[in-house]
Amino acid sequence: MKIAAGVAISMLVLLAGCRVNDEGRKTSNQSAATAIAPILGTPDAIDTHSFARPLEARVTHIALDLTVDFDARRIAGTAKLDIDRRSDAKEIVLDDNGLEIDRVTDADDQPLPFKVGAKDPNRGTPLSIGLKPDTKQVLITYKSAPEAGALLWLTPEQTAAKKAPFLFSQGESIENRSWIPTQDSPGIRQTWEATLHVPAGMTALMSAPRAEEPITQGGESVFKFRMNHSVPPYLIAIAVGDLAFKSLGPRTGVWAEPVTIEAAAHELADTEKMVAAAEKLYGPYRWGRYDVLALPPSFPYGGQENPNMTFLTPTFIAGDKSLVGLVAHELAHSWSGNLATNAVWNDFWLNEGMTTYAEGRIVEELYGKKSANEHIALSIDAMNKAIAENGGPGGADTRLHLDLEGRAPDDGLTDIAYEKGAAFMRTVEAIVGRDRFDAWLKGWFDRHAFQPVTSAMFLGDIRQNLVKGDKALENKLILDRWVYQPGVPPNVVKPPADTFAEQDRAAATFAKSAARPQGWEQWNTEERLRFLNRLPRKLGKGSLDELGRALGLNENQYNMEIRFAWLQLAVGNRYDPAVPLLERFLASQGRGKFVRPLFKALAADPRWGKPIATRIYAQTRISYHPLVTRDLDKLDIYRP
Image 1 (cartoon, rainbow, N blue to C red):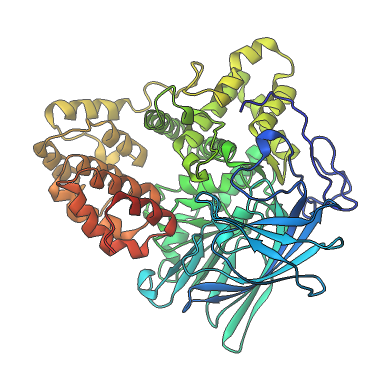
Image 2 (tube, one colour; image 1 turned 180 degrees about the horizontal axis):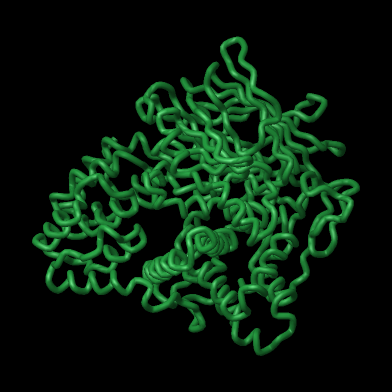
């Protein structure tokens, strides 16, 4: 539903003595680290993917005391919830997905009635807790299920070192309700703390600073963490395993398994520079430290922007820093996504579109205009592909502001949010000028720091603080068309036409004569990707033989992005010589960006591809995250 810009925002005042003005900003005597974020009351801010009713009663703080049990594959303990409520509220409704609730009490250890409601396939179940007139705190004793959707339990054999088990979580979009009983909505920001009990000798990390030094006693190690900033609950994250640390700078560092720590640190050498570059563009980094955790290969995403501790796929480790744009992206989320967060998943683009734009600006700041133009050109390619895959220029899901009613929120996690959102930001920048745009964007983050936001709020802020009543500028920007209508508006700004001229010529030449591309050895990753992706999608075996032989594409010498581009071409042409590389590729990592399209393409080819997919999946499924296997299982390639 389209919401007119400038619509009034109704909010709750959520903490005694915490006054919130009409724009949701805290009063000057408050600390941003302790302020309770507002709840937005407009229709476009109602989260249909949560059972919570936060305008009646909402969680403001979570205190976890949990034990990690690798044998049972469970996390068990207590969650103490501080709540704020209307005086007439009779219950608080939380989100749940498979939690086993033992008991619920108030602050005086008196039982409170609770009920787990009916299962919804897209949301899980509501957990309703009855409140007494004076209830301000709820204590839940519970454990997660072994198949909790947010958690992946790895055996020692599934790690790089193969010595110790490993656990990590992935909360976005609504998976954290499978291990934390809370109101699992990005619009209900919460402070939190945690005490973790893990097997002695193992290291626990979370997306928050350590509250004190860990101790080991009685066969367990105990770690404590505290996040004083109010954050969306999907950004609460945990990892436990055999981990080592290496400093990258005064406020940056990397965690990884000991056998990969040196390679990860080498790849991440520019991280401190990236933080400084991002601050120059968007204002101070407000989260203290910026550390990176290089996870085992089964991590399902490129990265997850958990505050203080980005969780990163090891597929970024290429040996030549060719894929560190991924780090720039996750770092940029420290502003767009973590600082100002989409209140609902319909506005996911506010996280990812702004971040993809910021990633390009960080790349330009550190590596120059040529690299930035190549980044933009590939972004435009990805946008056009996403438009085609989502119904064409008139497809409803090509809008930035989506309608995900009745669907899973992950249905909106497409390149539309990332690439069309970034194109929108670049277009506004080009029309108003970089200096004006940068000043506005920095102000946007200041005005909405640690708060939920919507598309209507975004457009209202642009009109108030950038357009300022200039009708000619308003007409040039066509803001509402970008956000609320499908397709790509005609004012989209593109990179210079000759950005990949050499690679485009080489692809056209190869299509005609299978001539080896000259200059391949000197091309960077972006240029090689452009060449491979511009080749005809249908090529004969002779052409593929020449390409594979001349460039060594069936070997393991290239980074994961180049291997993926080659394997997409190979699978689409039933190219048998690439199958051994395909097997190694799918067995070596579980990143959804890579494994989903390849398995999907294989499964769509019943004679050649599906038998290959079924054979490989039988061997690799155990190492993939539930967020990936739940999609791949639908392809009829799983034979339990």
